[in-house]
Image 1 (cartoon, rainbow, N blue to C red):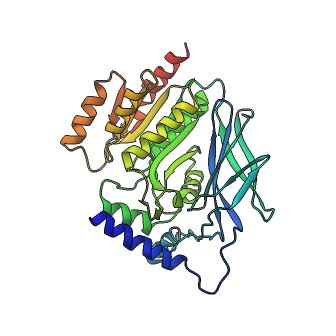
Image 2: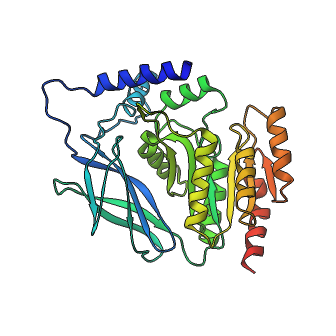
Image 3: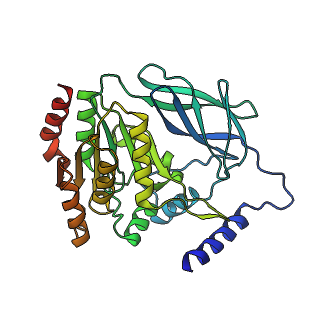
Length: 334
């Protein structure tokens, strides 16, 4: 009942903000590119068509109120639905939230690629996509909140305050995750993917934050917080992460996975289920113990995860597990 009421209220507010009386329908004038990925024989490009793209001033001298106002603006988007987008000979249309996905029937050489995506007005926007190196012995799939970025996601109030009151120059990253991910990528050419329940509205913010902190970049699988007559936000936290892991497993059938997360958002249970769905594919699980510690449910989820037989490393600092992770990767190469 409460969820239904929230859906109706939120939908009405969104409609009110979107209505522009006596004005022409929105026209797609720009594309916000999202990082794409590769399958065995395709390149997947992603992004969002917008009527306008806002710029944000991420100054260290910003007041909390300024940061909150700018953060809120990220969620009041001018998306444009049902717009034709094109890359090469492949044509698609944006959905009701302005998102698109174009699957190009080829897989270019390993590394970063930028393919032009065109709007009907002829504007071309380079959309990035990552193709894993053929010698990579594994892939790393990582959560974001409290795994690489300090968020306090275990508490809704703390999470919202941290998310809205900071900017790209004030948010804190976990330095141990940056160091470990960078070493694994540099040493073994591991592709890194990020799965998170954070909304797509934060994609550009997270991309800027990762670049600034020198956390290795990679395709992100974020969550659609859209609202319409038939939905109030998309799949839940667990199912979204699980679905994203499944996509990456199918996209990279030759690569085993290292799963990284934390103890604050049921990652142990989500990763256990992924291990069971993909037997033999998960080489290790790494979990950060968050400031919330572990409750009884967390402890039980961790126990059942260990019972799968997959090596599980759990603690405060990822650097403590780097030698074991390197050993597991080297073992898989032989």
